[in-house]
Image (cartoon, rainbow, N blue to C red; front, side, top):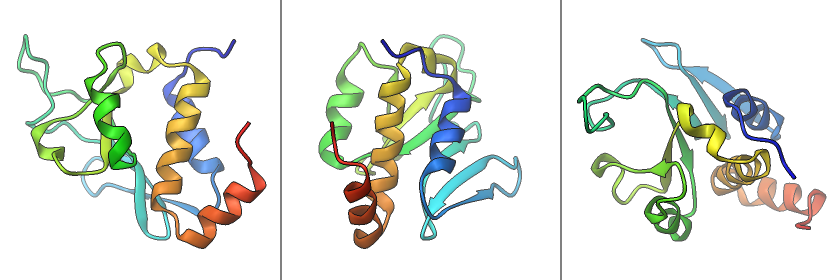
Length: 137
């Protein structure tokens, strides 16, 4: 059985993918993981669209992960997962995840999501090379 996921795993998994660069947000220095200049995982600064419905306080621990559009709806509509979205991300191929809820996922689950995020943004050649070296189980 896989252990529970941690925020550090997201950083390690993103950096473990090939051709990854890390840029930092201008104001908050939040990490943004990119492949070929395209973001695939980033740590978002507090924004007005992601907030606690009871207190109105903006979430300060949101991770944005790119996903194929066909995967997004099932991920955010399943109440058993910690994934969510906001109207700001309507039509955008990504899901949001609160770092404070990442422990609800296993390491295997977050590994798959980070790898899929990278695959969705990498060039076709890089994705094909990575998939050839890492066939599905």
